Image 1 (spheres, helix red, strand yellow):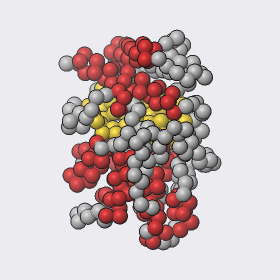
Image 2 (cartoon, rainbow, N blue to C red):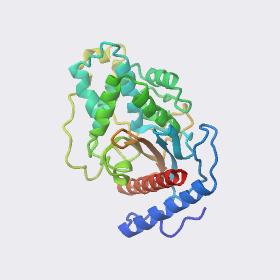
Image 3 (cartoon, rainbow, N blue to C red):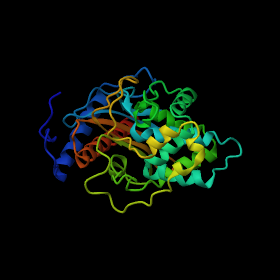
Length: 340
């Protein structure tokens, strides 16, 4: 489809509020036309509404699902089985695998809790690497994919790069549904309570209040993901969060995996060289994902995954995914109203 004038072109860096408003209205109207005029039942879920490709900001690739927990059906979706690299979204699986491994006793050691909270609230990478090593690297993804029937999820080719796990919007919805409906109350509480307390600033200095936080009023719970924007922003997000203690001082993490653990402790998941094998996902474009729930009772699950041209600025990408998320939520509300 042609790109209308209301969308920014390649190389532009600013979008006025009026242009954003027009763009949001345009994308909402476009998706609504397809969603309401041509409803169909995608293979993955009878009764849900699929849509044809919407008009999108220039150069972006996206996949999204809005899932209504009241009806137990998606209200709107697009290309929901397209695989993306997970970036920090895999931290949901890392946390879930760790917590369910605690068993009936369910006692989280203080040193682990000190890592778990910043990993979920502030997307701390070193904390994620700590649990990644502790849980057996890619075995975490394999266990969770089997347990949750995640058909589009696959471990990274290089076990040291957890952010190259393959995911899809459809599978991320399954992860949230499992946490909310099937996990034990203790596991659910730890994960969701922390996601409801997600900080504005990630521990790497990036502002993670894009997408859902920009598009919807609270209460919401979010787990965001990003990759391909460098190790730190030119202007760090403020206020900075206190960093957790270095988890790689724990001897048990190093046992049998000292070299990998040391490498993970000092590295970021951003800026890694693409691996030659593994899931068939794009490892070169910038990835920005917004996922989470809306409502007092986590009534809606929202997942929007995107890939952007390499070299795009953080602010530009954040504006674009927020625009898409706002349009998708507008469409979801209209679809619900039309079906009432």
